[in-house]
Image 1 (spheres, rainbow, N blue to C red):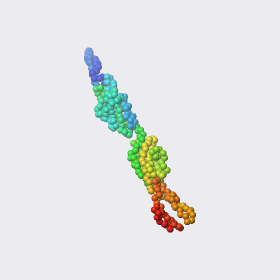
Image 2 (image 1 turned 45 degrees about the vertical axis):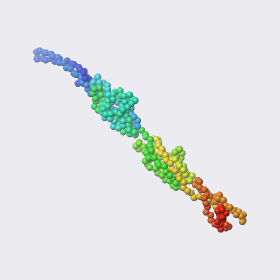
Image 3 (image 1 turned 135 degrees about the vertical axis):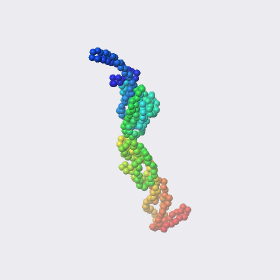
Image 4 (image 1 turned 60 degrees about the horizontal axis):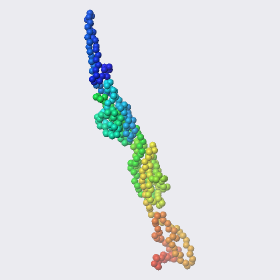
Length: 320
């Protein structure tokens, strides 16, 4: 009877019923006393509202009111505790009694009313899947049926990361370079995000004129010259659609290739019957390779007169 449902264990109500009997000529009455003893009814609960968290952030917003509680017993009008009967589906659900030290929640752990505010749930890194755990509510002596608490985690943009760094490499001077880096150099935890590629040197300045970067094909190309010999520190940048970016730096070392020296034609004017002693500088020797010097020269015979090569010891060879 709904009028007596509110009676708790140890409570009772009494009602007296008067019964009247009649044989048509006379009547007699009799009182019947009815006593209803109360019983401890179990509390009830229901599926709670979904809690809302954000990716990569520990959710700390649980409150007593988030765990529905009702009890027909008037003496049991407040939730005393909850019991986590099935632990979190993923992530890490933790409990605390003081908000400063936490332990993992285990199956059938009882969380008192005052400590519900200290429950916290840490999702797996980069995960946005809902996390659930199952609970019952208690009135101090009885438990409800089990219900599922769901906490959702909204996506937050993750910056791309370097998954497979580019290796340093050597490039010969005067040889054409065509280098395409792999599609798996960068990765992004956010499904559907892709890279917009740019490139500079590691100081943020433009690449040298000999080196071109084509973003659409992820390709570096060009031909370094003698002036470019040495180390070039290159930066490849991946930027996602939310302007979050990551850099991958590598070094191209341009190695020297021995270049052929050059010379120039020249004319010497001298008086008749007068020797002319040539110097090395007159032959117009030049070499783009730093440090290279004139070692020797190959001479052809003179078209007239005598071309003499002095061996430095007073002798020599004449080319007529």
